[in-house]
Length: 231
Image 1 (tube, helix red, strand yellow):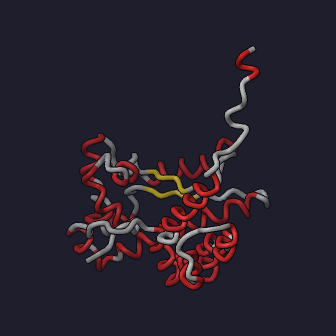
Image 2 (cartoon, rainbow, N blue to C red; image 1 turned 90 degrees about the vertical axis):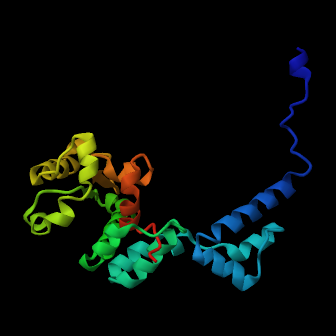
Image 3 (cartoon, rainbow, N blue to C red; image 1 turned 30 degrees about the horizontal axis):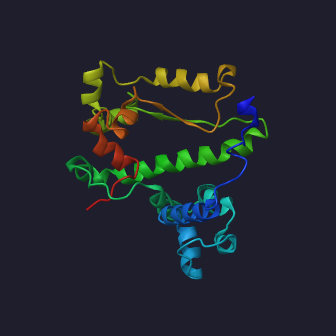
């Protein structure tokens, strides 16, 4: 009975709750304007560095599609130059330059190859929702080294890629048939709930490298993913 008669401690907010919320909004603004150029431009144009009231938030509002539809619009319009610049705003800054491997293969289009992969990933991710409303699922495969005639024509680059990882994990270069099995699965009824994703089929090499679980692969994968600044 004593507990029932006690006042609810959550019935009334803190006296300084509003001030804390405004402070949190200011902190989020400082974080996000470094990541979202549109927001930074709005804040700079209006001279807003801190959130002091609800009114000061209004000039900073913009539709999420202004930012999130960039990839779709650029891909549909074939503006690969603008897509590259947009992708750069999503990359993690201040990474060290990639190792000598990147420079050795720069003339073979490694940078362009990496951005083309990101363009496909972005297209699949943005089209998944719209196509599903029409009864269509869209997914992509990001394969590891696969023994195809094209790869064999430049085997020193493509078929030896991640060889050290495969040696350590006991895995092998993929066959075209294995990639076909993955595509057959994604197009089957068994994958009914899978939509708008890019499926990595590389024995876990990419994720192990990105997360640092496999440190030797990180510089190269960071380069391909557009996460480094070349010097």
